[in-house]
Length: 214
Ligand SMILES: [Fe+2]
Ligand SMILES: [Fe+2]
Image (cartoon, rainbow, N blue to C red; front, side, top):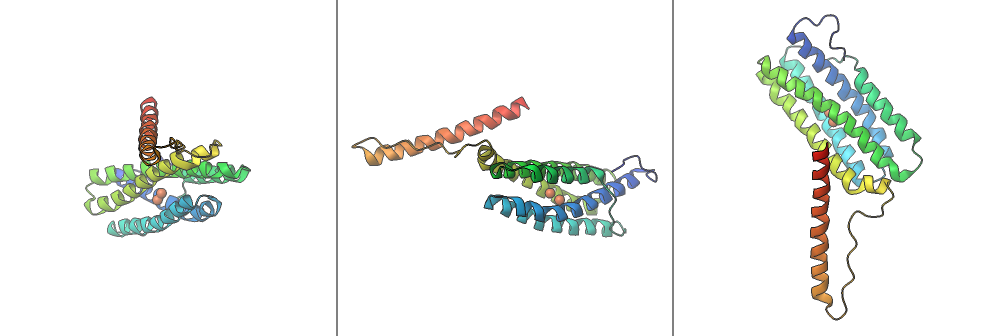
C-alpha cells in the first residue's frame, strides 16, 4: 500500500485505502494457501492451513460486510508488500531439497503473512474507533483475533515439531528412563511424572528466556 498515494486527503480516505489493501491481501492469501497445504509434510500443519483457508474466506466475507456498511462496493488495491511476502515464501519453499526443513520454512512464511495482517487489522480497528465507525469495529476485531490465534498456533507447531525436525532432532519429548529392576510399577510412574514435568518446565523456561531476550 502506498500510504501517500494521490487521492488520500483525509483520514476517511486513508481508512478506505487500507481496507482495500487488506481486501486485496486476503484474496492473495486465499490463492496462496492451497499451495502451502500441498507442500506441508506434517498432517497437523496441513490441517492448520486448511482451517485458515476457511477462516480467510470468512474474513473476506466480513470485509465485504464492512464495505457494505460504509455504503461502498468491495474492491481491492494492489499491495506490493503482501505480494512480496508471498513471492518470497514460494521461492524459499521451492528451493528446499531436504523435506524435513520444508515445514519450518512454511511456518516462517505463514507467520510473516499473519504479522502483516495483524498490523493492518490493528490499524483498521484503531482508525475505525477513532472515526466513530461503530458498526465495523467488531467485524475487523474478529478478523484480527483470528489472525492472532493462527499466529500463536503456528508458533506452537514450530516449537514442538517443525523446528526440531528441521534441525535434525528425532524427538522433542525427552526419552523415558528405563524402570529400575524389582520396582517396575512405582519407578515407571515416578520416572514418567518426573520426565514430563521437567520437559514442560524447561520448554517454558526457554521460551520465556527468548521472549525476554527479544
Ligand atoms: Fe486473513
Ligand atoms: Fe491470516
